[in-house]
Image (tube, rainbow, N blue to C red; front, side):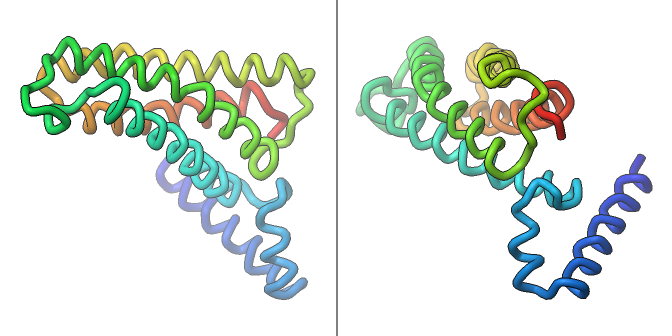
Length: 178
């Protein structure tokens, strides 16, 4: 599998270089954001889109967990109990989810995948259902990790990485055409 992945990456890089030789750098830079770019480029665009959606998720989580729903000891003079941290981290993530999910959906349609396998509403519903499933797994696992003594930030980052991997596979093969 490792060799197959490297071979695919090499082939995709060759495709990009050939396109650049045939069409020039300016046209290649216009071509890379399209959905016709090679799979490795698609994955990089997915990572970038996910990064933007993650920034949205984190920005809302940080704002809420530092203001309305404190989930960190350094925010008050007295330590925040583990139970309160868990509850407030869940609330902050639940509020942030719809915003980051919509951001991810629109970025995926614009830059990464080709819509059309399903009707628009079913596509959004399936996209959201998959996101919600991976989000729920992270949301349930986060408090368990926090109650086991893991820092809320470490639990949050583990949640984000797991969600990103599950979402890419499901979106690529179940939601969108390619």
